Image (tube, rainbow, N blue to C red):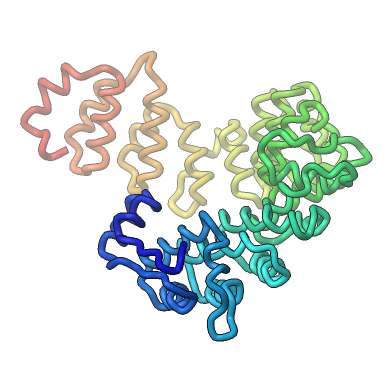
Length: 396
């Protein structure tokens, strides 16, 4: 901008173009920039719209600002370094982008510090690109493990082209990037690296990468006991898909171990692996629930339907009940039990107990009546409902 440049609100509006910024700018009076004093004043105390507009002009031609010279022993780089920590949002982002235009030791020092503390993801990525020019790629190498996700991503982007990356660096960069960067294979040499990531905060992304390695994942079975329960469940499901025979063999051996989880039992059941009767005495409620659902407690179901029994076990027992008992459970005070009974009855479409369920539409309990109507609808009994419940609809 020249010293005598005058910008009207509408000229700034054309420079910005965004609807939200336009609203701010149309209320601004013309801004006259005649010297460094005018520039420093508007950027320090001007309205938000005026500051954004002037900064956008400067971003288009950074030489304009420094050509005006210093003001009160402070040049334009000093001004930006002073203002950025006090700003936020779009203003801070634009101030930072302007500062990036100046190749100056003060700029490098400030941007390095800002990279470490910045919380705006988009700005961090810009900072990463800018600092690569001055500091080189090696500066970012130790930062691919940065605790802040944006800084780690920016560092991984900067380092992805290095030709001497170590396997652990390649794995972390592959975890951070989503555009096909190749991780190290899952082999005995690199298995510990994968195990460490599967236990870390990026475990879900690590699972995705591991699944992309296909059969290589089966090597993780050699470290089964070191996996967390969620990762064990993931490996079981993956093995069931990729190698059902290995899954059956592994589960058959695990059934006699001290630690048996519900996830293991569900896969074992799907694969036809025999389940030990001792599961009913497990301390894990979910394990006992699976045992009940597999029919190990059919002769003592009533004790698991009692009010004091843990809900997972109750619901497992409901699924094993005969039709008459399910009809009774449609009146249970626990809505979860009514819902489970409803679902179980809805699957018994061969000889549905229409008469008994029709009678339940006259129950005094709203939940029971609603369940009965839902069942009859699922069985296609709309004609009876239309003929018999017209006068009672408002009570359902």
